[in-house]
Length: 388
Image (cartoon, rainbow, N blue to C red; front, side):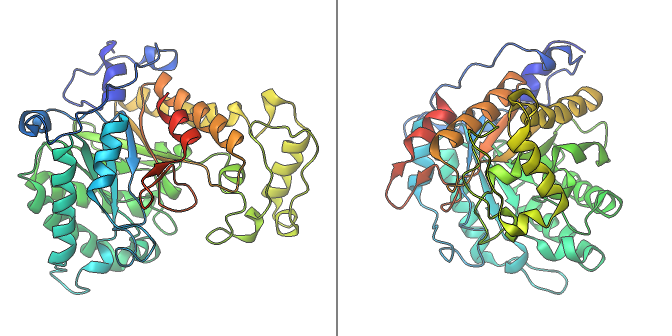
């Protein structure tokens, strides 16, 4: 393949020619994107019809993906879009819980109120020269009961594709966030094929993002069955490894074995960390802590080796298939010390940009946030780790 693939992967421009990916393993680091115009200055129309550059983005989570907007402490505002544009991000990812705002029976009509909120978000993104990913988030019933919800899932996308087919090219559709539970490859691939075919029948040239199974794990990318001739398809994985580090102490939504704190990055620690009792009772967690406390830095499970391994899965998949790769989520919770969070963010961001893989940070208004929209303030060390 030609060297144009490296720019294809980073800038997510599927209409470019595809070619060999030798450069993806050891490329020249990508330049930082220029700050987006913090409009309304400048007409957005011509810009928004170009193939979007999904290089550096922010997730606006816990807003429209909450059971009701504001319930989880985040309400969409113009400030989100203006701030991210002025900081130098080029896109936002907007998780939306469409599934709980649609009829349970055919034709599964989506509530007009949530559609109007998404319309407003698209308008704001376009105004501030940001691409926007509309992500179907938290459709947990589909993961738990795929046979019962497959038709509904497809029909929801029929409605969404129809509504957004006249929108600019800067609007990108993500079919399903983090398929998991019973949505293993054998059940997910046929449902995915139906949904994608439905979107393509309505909007053949729209950029569409597809997540890997098992919570969008990179090591499950090879289990995807995708149409080889779809050059407007982007494949996404999420990066939270090592997850015992990134999710340490977050037992308000993680199992008890994640309760151990004071895990530093990179390992090993200066003195051994004693895991909580729940962690010792889970074999893989116990083994991880044994290795974390004992193994030297080059082999430590809480170090760059683990990060490189995850990105190798993505690079190998891209090399084999020719599909652009995108890291739709990554982040580390606030139970970790700030210095470790910064080191991890720089390591992950650096690995992604060296391989020309675009990304969006998981900023959810809660335990992962890099920006506090209510106060209008950044967590400065995290902002700098993402942008400088």
